Length: 133
Image (cartoon, rainbow, N blue to C red; front, side, top):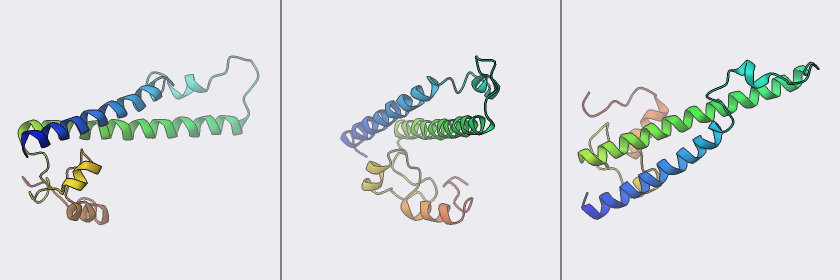
């Protein structure tokens, strides 16, 4: 990659990091990470909560926690891509070592795999290793 392409990739990755951190911040505002499930479901009134309401609240909390976990994973991928950019290995498939298409990098700036290896990994998880293995 040349310096201009590196700068463009870094900008895309930094924009993606900022977007993901914004989403994570919105979820953190809901106190997902600092409250236990019991705390988040407790009522201020002395009237018992209906079981269906508790089920809905539990479902919503679990959904938000799942989204938060996915965001954290995507942020880790972005940080990994930025390290690869610094190391000069960004844009190279971690499984086969071939260059990753520019269109794919533009659409998925933190991608680690070329299309072929990504498809193989989705069909048979664990089948695709990294180039160093």
